[in-house]
Length: 419
Image 1: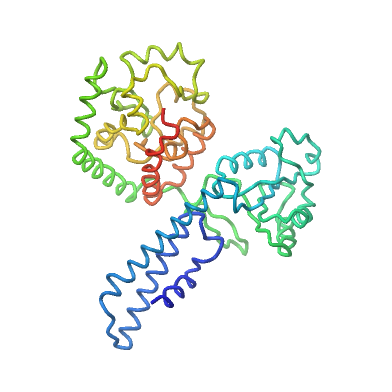
Image 2: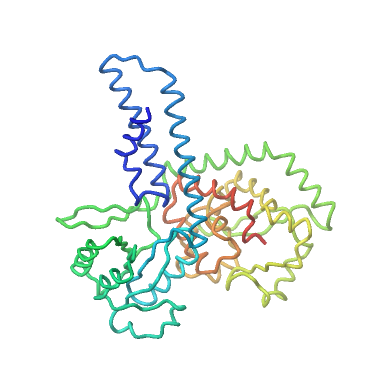
């Protein structure tokens, strides 16, 4: 079995560097290797009339798959922690116009656990002489024609090329040929950066490889399945944690004046408003004090948040730390106003200040948890909040929801951005 297992993993290309430690594709290939091995064993045993032990099918193969996934996940977490400490990093050269380069540089700095260390950039000739400190200290190493020389001189591991009119098809092709003489990988950023995963396919059209962008899966059987899953999970959750909900309600009622629950009008799918339910974590009448505290907001330009909000009660601070105040929203999920996973439910006052892009979030129900909660929550800037919500809507899938639910457990235990 060990020999056949390794062979199956090789055929599934699960050992290739581009699929390691980067995303769900690695796990998918491990599953594919397990299914392929089971199919091969079943076919061979049937064709040659061999008696294969049931333990292989019901124990050995599932156990090998599970242990491999656990090992891959553990190794990924270990590698991400090392990346965050500045170890095992890939030196990266950014190529494009300065605004796009600055944006990607900031994104890579925020997500340092991916292991990309930006060591410089190459800009079009007209921009190559601008002041370096405008790039937050990112050095300009040359122009677009100097990319291959810079890669060879600095032993760059990765070249990330952003959309740039000067780098058309022939220029990119020549750049790829030049980089083949080095060890550097070439990454091309599409113009639509938030569209990823199963929605993007390369299709041959009239002899040309064109990128086809599928419609987002927002309707049909998948949405029906999501609604059924949401309401079933919410009902089971209320049933199992009912005693804890009663206990929290008693604690809130006995430790401060005011009602146990706090209702607030929020905006849901298609712009319809609904009453969102939470455990009260602030003093009574806290809404009337917001106007006096706007100047001290620790949140972003639209979403008001303050790290040490004096309106929060001592018990409320603990509940917010572990998101216990949001458990009553399971009733909103059961009622159909919310989903288990989705964008953050906004206030009507926030919606009035939304730009065009942010109205995209109203195509789906707001969520009890979501990318916002597992990506930093109140520590995020407004631009990051917009980008994260749009990314979820554009790339929604049931697998994406399960991944966010899994990450929510760690985010709640860490409590980062929860205030």
